[in-house]
Length: 170
Image (cartoon, rainbow, N blue to C red; front, side, top):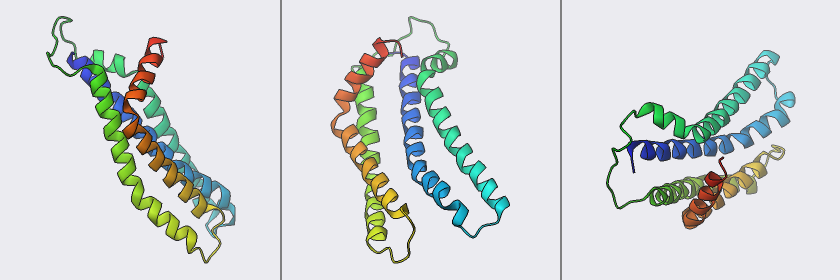
C-alpha cells in the first residue's frame, strides 16, 4: 500500500463525515422552511437565513461528493512519489476501509445517543406546538443511531459493497 492509497482512504472517510454532517443539517432545513413564514422575524432576516442554511447544506454535500469521487485524483496530485515506492504493511486496503467504517459507525452511534435522549424528552414534553419539529428531530436522531450501528456491525459488508461499486468504475 502506498501513501497515495492511504491518503485516498482518509479522503473518503472525510467525505463520509461531511455527508453525515449534511444529514444532520436536513431536519434544521425542513423545520426552517416549514415554519419560517410564521416566525416573528424580519423579512430581511428570513432571506439571509434561507441563503445561509441552503448554502451550508450545498457546501457540505458538494464537498462530500467531490472528496468521494475525486479522492484518487487528489491523492495522486498530493503525493508525487515513484510508482515502485510501497509501504510494506500487513494491513490491506480493505482492512483500512473496514476500520474506517467501524470507527465512523462507533462515532455516529455514540454521538447520536445524547440527541436521541434529548429529542425524545422534548417530544414527550412538548407543551407548545412546534409543528413537527420534535418528531423530525426524534426520527433524525434514531436514523443516525441506526446508521451508526449498521456501519459498526456491518463494516465488512460495506467494504464488499464499496469494492463492488469501485469495480463498476464509480
